[in-house]
Amino acid sequence: MKIQFDHILIRYGELGLKGKNIKQFLIRLQHHIQHKLRDFKGIKVKRTQGRMFVLLNGHEPEPVLDILQHVFGIKSMSLAIKVENTLEDIQAATLFAIQEEPTVKTFKISAKRTNKDFPHGSQEMNQILGGHVLVNCEDVTVDVHHPDLEIKVEIRNEATYITSKVVPGLGGLPVGTSNKTLLLLSGGIDSPVAGYLAMKRGVSIEAIHFHSPPFTSERAKQKVLDIAKKLTKYGINIKIHMVPFTKLQQAIFEKIPENFAMTVMRRMMLKISERVCRNEGIMSIATGENLGQVASQTMESMYAINAVTNLPILRPLITMDKDEIVQISREIDTFDISIRPYEDCCTVFVPKAPKTKPNKEKVEAFEAQFDYTELLNEAYEGIEVVTVTDQEEKTDVFDDLL
Ligand code: ATP
Ligand code: MG
Image 1 (tube, rainbow, N blue to C red):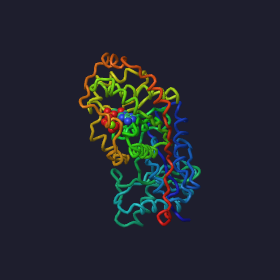
Image 2: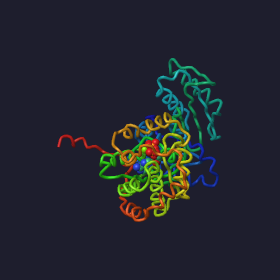
Image 3: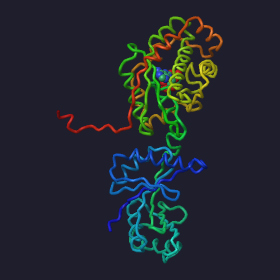
Image 4: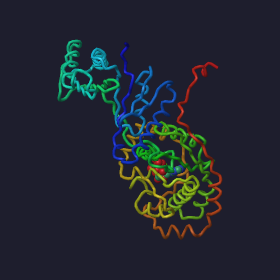
């Protein structure tokens, strides 16, 4: 029998707290994993007796682990070998598991026999298997307190499972278990991180982006699509609502005193976003806002901007420092795209000295001097919807030759 890692054991953390919803959560997680592994023919994802397994069916474990490390809801994973309940097979698999980790110097065997027909008890198996490893491997010793590697051997009725090192997962909750939000996605560093963190708590996302052609270029738009593509790695397809914002922005900058224009612009963004939410059945909005970072992100400013909607606004970055945000944006690989130098609508129409503490009543009074309804309708009706898929882009090796 050829011994190889043929299973990946999946551990989920917080799902255990979800009481009656647990089954639904696990089904989501299972389906999401199945979806992400769809290109691996023959791989299966199984749920049995409170645990989840990926059956590799001949595939190498590394590329599968790499994908699973981008799935929210997985706390950790271990490679596992399933063997028949014979001492010989269990010994061989235990030895294989330790030999696969050449840097390991100390180990511990933790056997657990739930199959009472198996002739050796848990403690006895620890000794038998520990001895077998010591005889066959040089340079390793047993350390029961702080081993480099703990090999778990579970002798169950149907088979024995040998699991080795623990690979951390992303944690969080399976995407889609906490409903959906509309993410205001700019081309900046912050909003993609906000989207990622919302997804981490099980929220699936649609995105909305405001652009102002011809002041903003096609490349600025492409930047947003490229960022969204990176986010799909952690979830599923993302639908992006591209709003033509030029006329509305021009009107705002014509009618509103310059230092209040930013506030009004944000209020208009929220009004349009709210309409999209109502139409799509989405119950919240998410932004990359962060307290104190820029003029539009003071408490007073948020108060004046937020007043146009009753929808909950998720602000996952609200208390974070910029360097923490940058670090996550590097981890999720959006940073390099975000710093591409194409202008977005806010940078084009940036007022020289925006009010850091805009008074809500004043903002409303300025806004009331002109009827924006038609321009709002026009922007809303001009929305173009683009869907970015989570499909890996396949680059054909022959493309370059043609
Ligand atoms: P970011 O890095 O996400 O652009 P920022 O620090 O530049 O954020 P602002 O420009 O004040 O902050 O924007 C605050 C939030 O408003 C953004 O995080 C984003 O959610 C939203 N936003 C700003 N500009 C746009 C836009 N053109 N389209 C969609 N949402 C936007
Ligand atoms: Mg910005």
